[in-house]
Length: 230
Image (cartoon, rainbow, N blue to C red; front, side, top):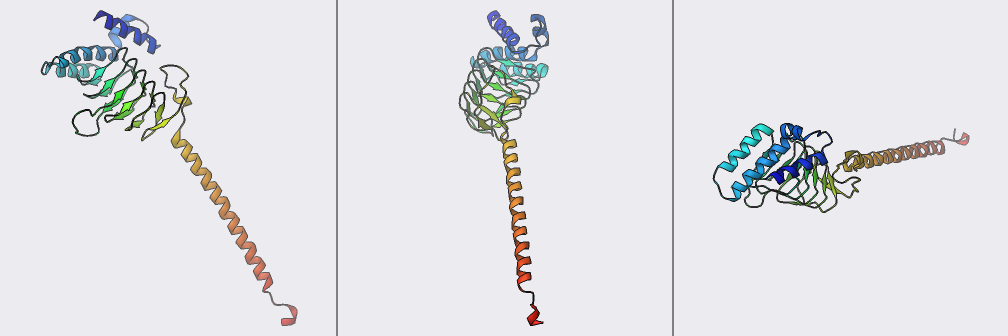
């Protein structure tokens, strides 16, 4: 157990530059508390101990604002940064070295039975407020942008942004970092393309109007009566 705690503390030092001391982490990091309480609850859940795992989960939720069902499977060096509003469902599976920010939901899409929550591979980063829904697989080294809603599988080494989430091939400059400032913006690109199409159409309409005006003027000149007809 002490080895698990030590590894969790080392993970926080690695992922969060704001962490200044071991005592600060122990006293002030809800993600640290939630992860350790979940590991205890999960052991009891796997041992088929009734009720107590859920009680531990709810106590953890009360004190940390993080709700992790005791049935969820979580790998090593898991870190929830800030953490308020994080929800992780019963059949969720999380690999090693996964980083999750506040407001993230790893949830289901209805009242279906069986595997109904997502599986995250190793070294996955899930940005603030993202929702990953259903029994889908998120590949290793994937990055999910803030606010994304992901309902389809995500391949390895890719980034997902937007609502609904869209896969965008992207080179991550620093391992574990989700650099939103460098991410492509599919919605923005579509808006720019639409604006360009509108501009092109406006130019075409102006050309047609100008052509009709010239034709009308030429036609009127050709039909003017000559002197011999006056």
